[in-house]
Image 1: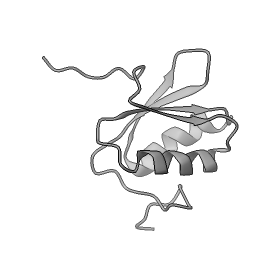
Image 2: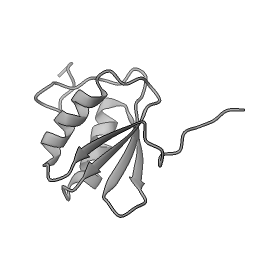
Image 3: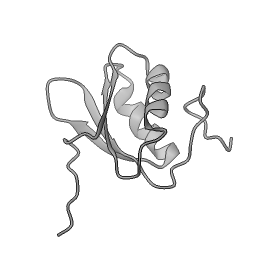
Length: 98
């Protein structure tokens, strides 16, 4: 039987409470650097731009954006993808090829 993890079950949680998205993405990038493909990551993000920025960042990098996680806090889920494009350490909106 093939078991797919639920987006509501996190393997890794990044707390970005109070951070602007650029700082949050830097923290996220560092935290997932050694994560294995398939890892479900929850990102707690209070920046109002997060619902737009997180899916856009996933699109740029190739990670799978899974959407908001139901609950009282603003949490968004993504899945680490095999072969994702790494971003610049200080410029999370730029892949290392740019």
